[in-house]
Length: 110
Image (cartoon, rainbow, N blue to C red; front, side):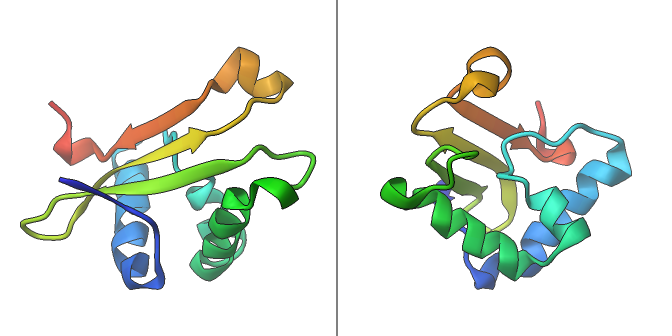
């Protein structure tokens, strides 16, 4: 397995990843809001947000700097999970989210 920064190359695989959570009625965590962007905007807009989240000096005041990764299985390049590593915390994240958010696709658990 390897950690991969999201790119346009992973668009269809990322959409399939999020769809699986809906199919299994499973909560989505650690996606850097990918599920919201797929409903309300586009994958491409989400990629812009992911890149902006890395720009520590210019992160919006309502957000925190963060790195978002796909966990990808090397054999078939399938997204097995996601991690959102927050480099700082705001009041909400101090009590609710913490420094790390993550998810594993339902069919790859255990």
